[in-house]
Image 1: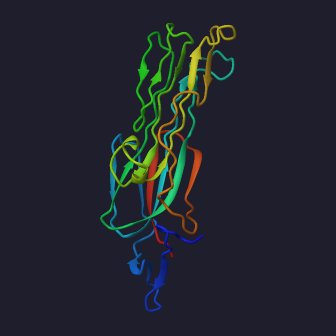
Image 2: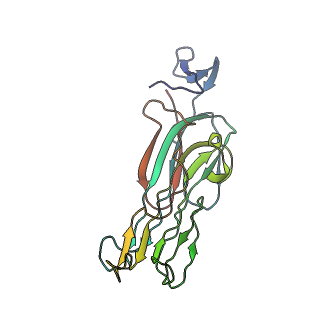
Image 3: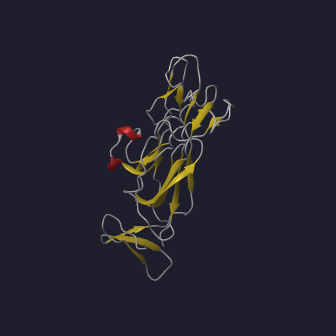
Length: 245
C-alpha cells in the first residue's frame, strides 16, 4: 500500500547511491535517519501529558480506551450479590503520522468509571477521567432498585491540549472509545427475582470518546485501524518512532 499524505505521495530517495535515505515530499527532501523503535508509553495520570518531537519523521500513534465500569450483581438467577459484572472492553486505534522537530502532541489517557452497587441511599457516582456520564447506586427508594457504573474515558493523541469534549475532530490525530459500563440491581423484576441480584454487562453508561483514525496514515506493515474490545482496566497510549523505508 502506498503512503498518502495530504493527497500527495511522498517519494523515498537515496543520495549518491548511498544507504542514506530521505523522504522527498512536494520537491523537498526531508531526512528520515533517526533511530527506529523508540517507544514512549502513557498511563493514566488524570492530567494531559505532552510529547515534544525531537526528530522529524514518522511516528506510530496508538490509543486504547478505558474499560467500562463494573456493577454489583449476578448474571442470570444466582443470588451472590457480591459479584461484579465487568464492563465492556475499551477500543484500540492506530495509525502513522509524519511530524516535525518541535511539534507537540498532547496525550489524554482515559480512566475507568466507578462501580455501580446497592446502597440504602441513592447517590451519583462520578465519571472516570476524560468522561462525563454519572453512575448511580441503587436504594430501597428507587422503583427498580437498579444501579450502574459511571462512564469511562476514551484516550486520544491530539495537536492541542484538552479533554476530548473540548477538542474538534481536526485537533485529534488518533483516539479510542471507552467501553460501556455495566448495570445491576436487586429484586428486579420482583415477580422473578425477589431477593436476587441481576447484572448486565455493558448496560450502564456509554463509554466516552470516539474511534478516530481520520488524521493518520497507513504504510507498509502499519495499517491504520480501529479494533473494538481490546483493553481492560484504564486507558493507555503509545508513541513509537518509525522509519518508512
